[in-house]
Length: 636
Image 1 (spheres, rainbow, N blue to C red):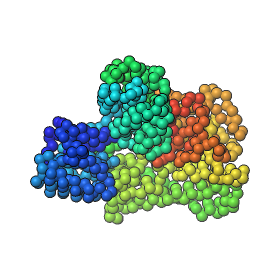
Image 2: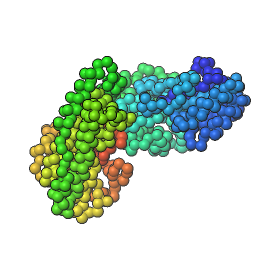
Image 3: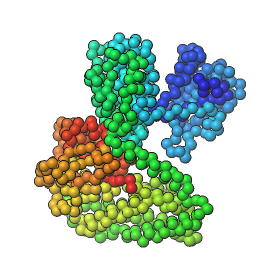
């Protein structure tokens, strides 16, 4: 209401959309107070998208003439049309009806330097931004405030409705607050909002009143696969969402179910609407990662990444400029000299191909193909780095005109950023390299280790006993080669094979002197959200086709964010009829096997590689909620 007092028929209201916040109910409720509703014909809500331009223009012109409120949602999806809307508002506002109001909503651009709304439209609007909090108490209080005492009392099964509604608000606050933990919370960004909560509450009430008993399975499916799940595009995030629901929405809600450590569900027979708010104020423990099911290390990782992001932003703003540019140029030249001197020659592909030709027809041929592909891709990267450094050197000497790629390379070197990582950079190192979060010096050192492995492998094209899988451009190709070799040896169809993983007792890869049966050894991986015990803590080893394996997943140690894993035995196996095919691999659905996603970097998301099978003595849901995953490299 206070914001509305600042608006006029000449000034549109602009809502900045954040995940967890939906301004639509605010506008609708305010409209009802002032007699502006859809039923009265003077309120129109349009969700912008393809084909909605003409209807939106018609409504704006009509309401500007006759009076009314129009809300144009998600205008960031119509960036090419918004300037036309801006011009239309300028025209109609000259003689607009006193009761005309225009409300616009749009998400901020994904990168701060981008612009998706005209600057003049933003300057001429009343801007409203209300970002959802990240703590549980604020979110659950805001969520519960969407309902009223009368709403609960009006349900024919108010005891069940109260308990389930409070659990739903708790679930809503958990999925919103989990975002602050970055990719360990959700591997992608999702726009969960208040609308999801209120619609789920409507569904909950309808299903409770239509069934003699609480239909738990139906509710979990609708909430996890349709309502909240409708936002989710990542299979592993969907599993996280459904795991929360399986833990929180069940018949134990009426028997003091532990919603979080030290916080149990209240007795719905003794509390009313206000009683639940009091219960939250008095009983809810302080916010911590464990309340979300995460390990305490998640908070350390989140704060570390946040700090790094701030300093990277400061560096990018100040890099390459200022009065002390002389010392900056000197540092760039020193780095260029180091890279040029250190960079090895390209692999001699003709010689390697001659060595490979008689080996391609053998059983180990697929491994030879992987080595050839890796050498070719490394040659492309080495060539691009050398070419760009030579060109930049000539440009700095005045022998060539300085181009934009040269300028971008100078800026990247000056702030220790891998060239091309900035999406606006025209330097091409990133496009030739592998996914990474490392800085320039760390990734260059990583590249040298990769070249060293390839040099050893390509000298005679004999596959190493254990391969540093993170050192490959395409790790999936090596895993496919493992299945191809096993298929040739056993005669099994390749399309009916997959891989499973066993964590061995080998702590150092150079202590291995044999090839495992029906598989391969890999090393150099890390685990996030848990750890793997070694030595006596792992227990008595057992043999899997002759290879000693031991241990199960255990809780990580505090401040040990990415503990390294022992050597892993990747075994090619035939697909079983009970396994469920999915977009991320074959799901076993076995109680003592945690299906662990393996990512190249901590960014997760699109860097997913394959599904690892890790033994667990705890419920799999524990590791799902901690965001436990295997990573192929650290960020530093």
